[in-house]
Image 1: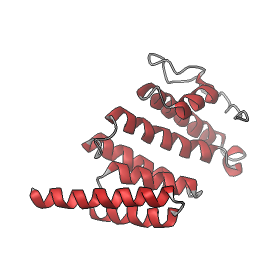
Image 2: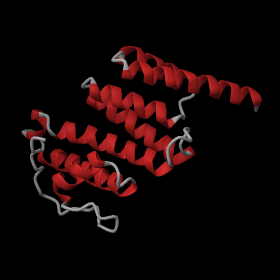
Image 3: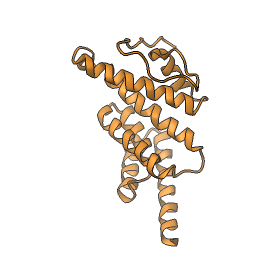
Image 4: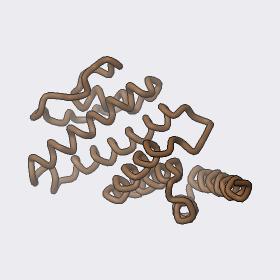
Length: 175
């Protein structure tokens, strides 16, 4: 048990170093460090979600989606690793991240002009995830913004995240 705590403490130190590298603009170093953490302990949701964010930020959208889904699965199975945020906040971040991956895929030309069912499925899932993220963490303005502008028109915690099929993705207004 003590060995496990020592190992997790070392992983936490590595995680903080990876986040510092990311903040310093060294995404490649952060990615490498996060992958090393996950190689040692693949069940940690926060490093997986941070890796997904880096992948999305570097336009590796499909890989980011896979990591975000895996990170959410880890959260569901074992809960958050970090004690710095509430579980709902971490879950909201993961859902918003996955929603962003799906939204970005829906914006690709081959999807827009390709299979309309795939486009609709991506938009519908993204919309529902943004709505759920906004419900879990009402302070998440990014999720609330996208939940609203992707067509739900509401982010009320009691609102039904299901949206009538066939609605088109609303364009994002300039900030």
